[in-house]
Length: 171
Image 1 (cartoon, rainbow, N blue to C red):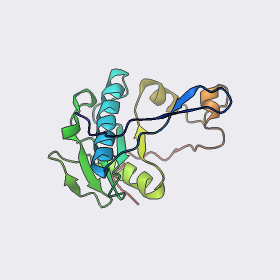
Image 2 (cartoon, helix red, strand yellow; image 1 turned 180 degrees about the horizontal axis):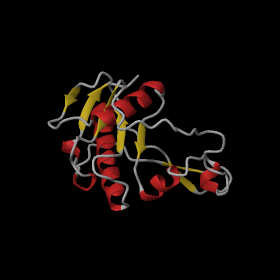
Image 3 (cartoon, one colour; image 1 turned 135 degrees about the vertical axis):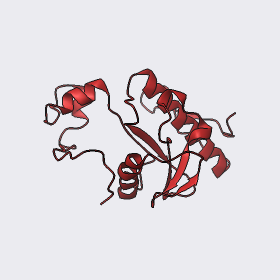
Image 4 (cartoon, rainbow, N blue to C red; image 1 turned 90 degrees about the horizontal axis):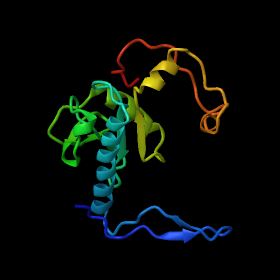
């Protein structure tokens, strides 16, 4: 059951007068936390449905709204399609599990703690090991701006070509 106490309002676009949904607002920090955790668990389920899961690889995290140096992440070894809100771990930027009952995926921590630390404006981060992503990465080249989707990354992405195995180091 969701604790969201304020609904999402829609504001009309000034040019088209079409209602555009706005981000939800919350009466309490607990309600916002619950909302983020529910959305995070649902993202894992969706990623599973679309085949974005490969064993224990790939992660999605959401920053906690109160403790902004903490984030929620999936536990090690629980399949994306099985993740529930109650399974999520709250982790601080030192890798300590603050809330949760399962072990932490150290690669998830190593990657996502650095993203959240470097970008305090980012609420959530995701990476997958999808069939298409792995296929493209095997080519070792940047995206060409040939489609509208790829244009979103034009001159705003990099090629990581120093892969040495599972990321466990945060330096």
